[in-house]
Image 1 (cartoon, rainbow, N blue to C red):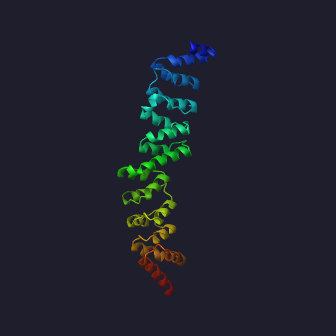
Image 2 (cartoon, rainbow, N blue to C red):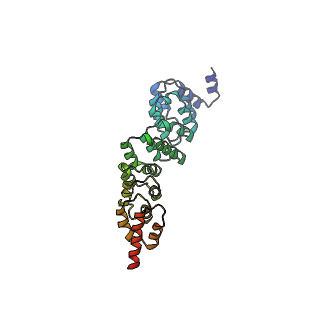
Image 3 (tube, rainbow, N blue to C red):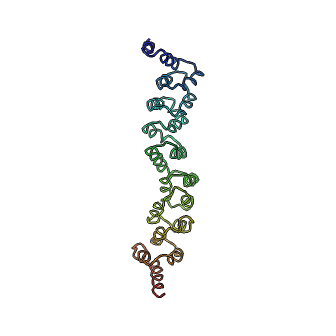
Length: 265
């Protein structure tokens, strides 16, 4: 009686559509979810015949209101359906708070996909990246290699810090990787001789003078890179390398010998 009284106060056509959305049979619900009225769609959410297939079809729409998407996210069936969670997150109109609440339930590469979704907000992308980074310690090697190839700049930066030569080349090939991330890796204490050499010989990065200097200032750098890089640097840069407190005595000797050679020439 209460619902009927409510419908009676509305525009007759809208009242009819609301009632139809609430009471129609399962097959007819697919027609209901094409209705332009958010009120009608909210009414359809209360229809006992509504199932996951209806919701998945509804979530493909890009004109849904935040109110409706919040209501969908609170349905008991969503907590039981991974596919529905993904569909809600993929809808560009989904409010940030709803998206952030669902991210921990998504699979690793579903999170990667979110980072590249059209219309994704900076907050949503950042939250997806953070969720991925938090899982890295338990991520299998094969998935890390794929992440190194497909990940965003933030994800690849986190991977490169690990310095693992098994996926370092994949990181260095990633088009999103920034020079600053490599510089920080080379300037840190976690870089291994193999990791340093991977950067030093990489065709994309080996010619960057700032990276060459970072390589030469790392105490773990193999001598071969001193032999290859020192002759091509100017004397001011060489003096800067020589002044580094991180260098070993053997490394300082190599730099001093190059400077002495230039003085003699």
